[in-house]
Image (cartoon, rainbow, N blue to C red; front, side):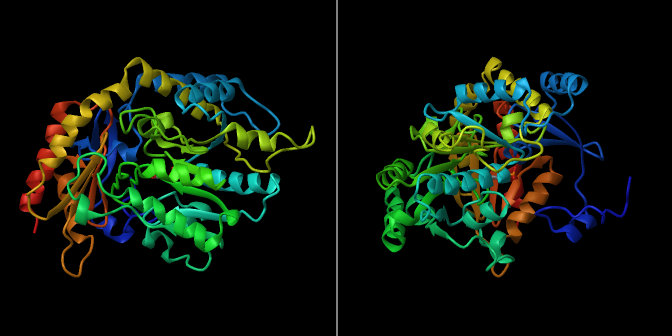
Length: 436
Ligand code: PLP
């Protein structure tokens, strides 16, 4: 093995710091990783919010291996392969009623950029080309394409590209309100009125100029912001009233993370588009998808016969290996009742997360389904340093967590059991007590 470690430019990582004390994962099974020095690491993050059915599922491995032997690649430009169509139908069985077509990508970022391109093209097709404005939200994460970065709202993710991002973009205020909602369990009671910020943007820009609003139903990567009660419903009502499309980025919330197939079911709100990735293949093979309403699809299908309707797609759209993995993953989710397990375990997970209240540095705990965020007071003059130290100490103690700023995010595989939850929060508790 290379001892230098400099050839791989690592994403979202302090590269030089990593090399001084590398954390290398060598194997994984169930809810555990194993490091290259043979230590068992409890996976408190389902990889990166994506290994929902746990690691090393033999049925997914076998499906991919069989596929690799039968048909390793097939283009989907002007060609097809059966699994792409089968998977689209299967996905729609899970997806909210009212969404009827699946466009494939290879990641959440691509699914988001596809969604943004589709909405702009849709309005143009319908004779409203002036609807160009894309509205995201402060603190949002929608991946790293130019579209996703533009509608995203995490300052550090945008800083280096200020002035070069998409021109017609505005942002809603975020829904974080620790003054009223700190330590809320599940959806916070206060904050439905944050949706009125959309009315402000409509007054400022004119509804006739707004193409779409994109939000994560639960903001994950910024450090877990749970939507206040009634907030998403209100966003839906306002967008519908003004002919503005609503996109839910379900890259994290999809496939059982919140104890339901998608957040849309949990909240009873149907957007015009959802974007998916991560849990779609249990993270075994990269895949993303953009699922749209019939109104959107039909607008594209009304042009001249024989013409390409959408000049967009990826070499690996509906890659056969990803399709095989996704079909096997959906079987696993259904056969093992994994979403139901997540729903059943959520109250226990919630209690365990909130048991951290009162421990040193903890200024907020928030949770929904199998996601929790634990916010720590920043060290004076060193934002993020305390949580990063906690992340490293947890790892050294045998637990993988995720850290953003001074917030720890916990989102274990949905096959976790109570004993794993106990172990996770036990380690975090011990580490917090020992952290300065
Ligand atoms: N959208 C959301 C809500 C995400 O959480 C992520 C990744 O965490 C993405 C998009 C980007 O997905 P990917 O990293 O697969 O491009």
